[in-house]
Image (tube, rainbow, N blue to C red; front, top):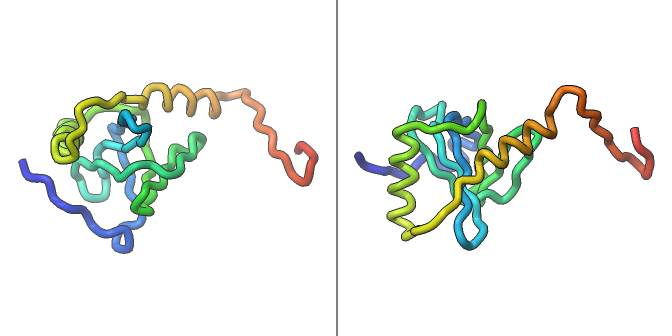
Length: 124
């Protein structure tokens, strides 16, 4: 199965991923992998620059915004794409941190959790 380049960030500034994973490389960079809903294909992102744990949204080095949908999971096409990406980029070791991220997200968004917002030195 071939791997190809994806649309530019200008053409596709945002992508939704289901069956997603987050892989941390030995250098600390994290990449998303999952099923890209809009293109119906496996996808691997450039490394994550910003991550919103509450909304499960990431901005990657390319500037693309990824919206993670649902809980972490697996998808055969996404797994294939991730493994090819590792081969191409000569990555031998990585750690899937998706479950830890999901747990942190659920903790932040649990029912009954009171969220406080600070404004001008006061708490609302």
